Amino acid sequence: MRPFMAKILEKGPLGRDMVRFVLHAPEAFLQPVLPGMFVHIKVPNDASHILRRPISIMDADAKAGSITLGIQPKGDGTQRICTLEPGDEMEIIAPLGNSFALNGAKTVWALGGGVGVAPMLFACHEFSKMAQVTAVLGFRTAEQVYAEGDFAPFADLMICTDDGCRGFNGTVVDAVREKLELPELIIACGPTPMLKAVQAFALERDIPCQLSLEQRMGCGYGACLTCSCKTKRSDGSETFARVCADGPIFDAKAVVL
Image (cartoon, rainbow, N blue to C red; front, side, top):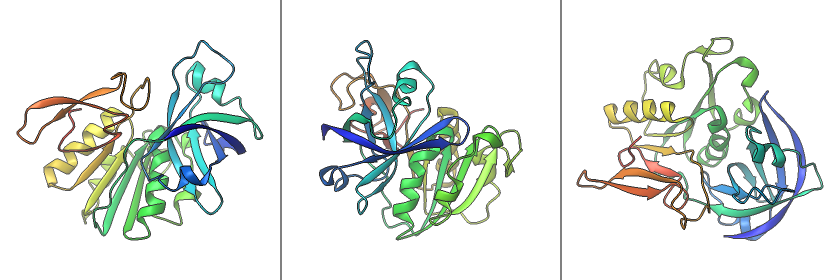
């Protein structure tokens, strides 16, 4: 983990609301990078933005020496990051956080919602080498759907929209309730209401489940405690963990949402 300058190789739209960046990544970064990890990006050209922005790694290609990020330009910091163009460089600290673990599962559901769809691609890419993966991806409307073609080689794919304009009409949890065969593992990333529903679904059926939490972060490596979340010890008592350093992936049985 160390800061480095990553040159932007490609930039393009990702659905209606997001931007895809493909960055050159040094070999020292790519060797330890795993699905679920994230990068921490410095906001360019504005010293008033002290805090970096955490962005999940959407995919990585060791052979090409590149990583792919999907960024939603929602606030001023991410909007400034998204003004960068091919040939510019992003200052990044990475790789950060823990990762999804297959743990020998042969069937996996990868559930993503909105921005949380992006890290599911890297997980599907890697887990499909050893397991049968079904990706269930949720969006508000059809215009926000992104990365369908990227998922296709690695997973059976189901698209869900809240307004029913594309695919299943409803949430990702509504969609998986209709599946007959439960998986050996569920992994998920998305807004907290979605993660709470996934957590309840998995715990009710005693399915191993790992949740990737989205949280505001200060330092990104566990020093500032800005991103603390409530968790449970094995005896049921509650404590706190750092999403950046202890997560962002947590066992569904251990995190309190």
